[in-house]
Image 1 (cartoon, rainbow, N blue to C red):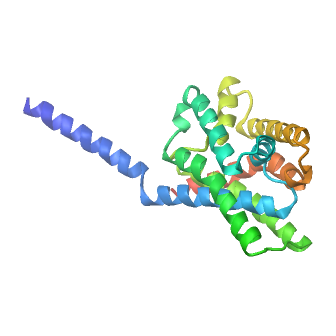
Image 2 (image 1 turned 135 degrees about the vertical axis):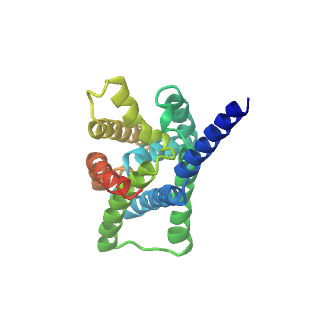
Image 3 (image 1 turned 180 degrees about the horizontal axis):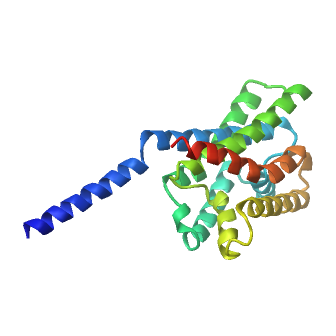
Length: 229
């Protein structure tokens, strides 16, 4: 009986050790910084005037059509995607998933509100180009950081893993990400046209750069960050 108790205690200690290791300060920091960078990326794209990232493009197009606040609609679509992820690639869900799906849209809304509405931030062409570069860099680095932390990823970022799983690895993560990004752009454009919105506000060179480059860049930065965890 004592031996069984000792074994049980040792197993409990091992499990607690794994949990503490998984939720180390470094991993949590990577996750939080990554999510903030993604929020900043969305804001940078929106202020650049060169188009936004594909997922934001879709959500801006639909939220413009139904008249909802961008952050609120993005939260709703994330909840829908989260349900799909739960039944397909459940291992992708973690505390980072919840923080990401709640915070990114509102971080972007807040930054745009502060800089544009309250501070009257004016974008000249050089600033627009700078915001485009910053948005592209923050998008890939942010995604790579919180993916490397392995504390859960955003529902939309899980879509590429779902495609990879369904195709039994015949479609790589890189190609799956490109396919999902292009699909989002098409949906966003359709809803924007239906609602007679301004297409230049959601799609442009920045959208295309993000759609075709984000997957490869995420893979590149993810390997670097994983080696430091």
